[in-house]
Length: 69
Image 1 (cartoon, helix red, strand yellow):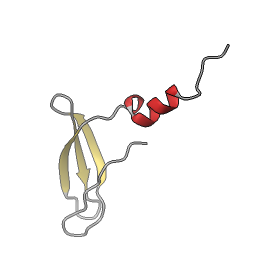
Image 2 (spheres, rainbow, N blue to C red):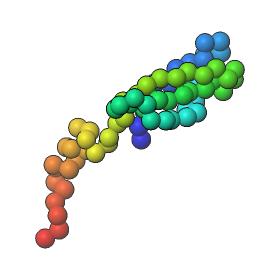
Image 3 (cartoon, one colour):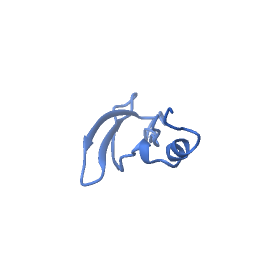
Image 4 (spheres, rainbow, N blue to C red):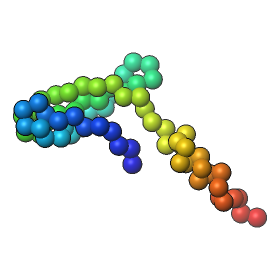
């Protein structure tokens, strides 16, 4: 699962929830987060994450994982 920083609402300090994800400018996703208590919207640009290119996945693939013989 992909995790990211969820900002807190400015008035209630409640963690915001992800309301919308849309393609942003080249190489980024635009995410809209909403405060569940007051309806405060926060928009941020996030670089997409490809789990198949992570260090952990690469280590698993290069480890003892082999094709059946």
